[in-house]
Length: 169
Image 1: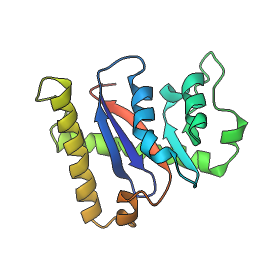
Image 2: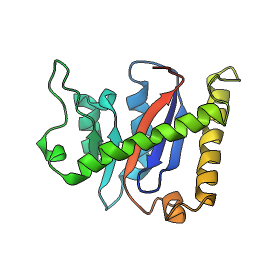
Image 3: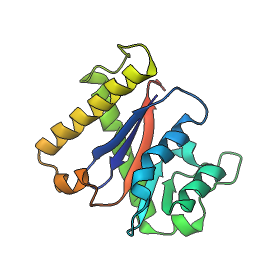
Image 4: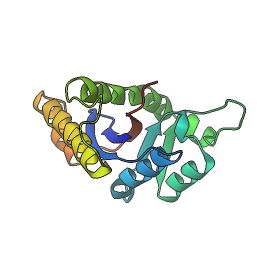
C-alpha cells in the first residue's frame, strides 16, 4: 500500500512510503510519516478518513502533540474524536481539504503508471511510489502553487495523511 503525507495549505506531498498491506499498516505509516513534523512549537494537525478513528491511534497522536482531525466513525461504536477537536472550525476545514489527496493518488495511477506495480518486492515498489510522489510535488510546485517553497520546507503547518494506493474500492 502507498501512504502519502500532504501539506494541506498548498496540496504538496511532503512524505511518501509504501508498506505491506495489513490491518494496522495505514496507522503505523501515518505515525512514521508524522515523526519528523511532530516536534514543533506551532500546532500540527493530522487529517484522515474513518479508518484512523481508533482509540490507540488518537492517543498516540496526542502523545506527540499532534491534533487528530480524523473523520468520526460512529457506526456501532463511540468515536475516539470528541468535542475537544470537533468544536473548532479548523476541524471542518481539514475534513474538506483531506479529499485533495485523492488527486495525488489519481495522478499516480494514471500519469505515473502506478495502477499496477511494475516491480516485485517492497523496496522497489516503495522506490517507485516515492519517486512518483516526488515528481508530482515537483510538477505542482513548478506550476506555481502559492507558497511552494514554504511547503517544501514545511514552514506552513497542517499535514494530512491518507492511504489509498493498491486498493480499488
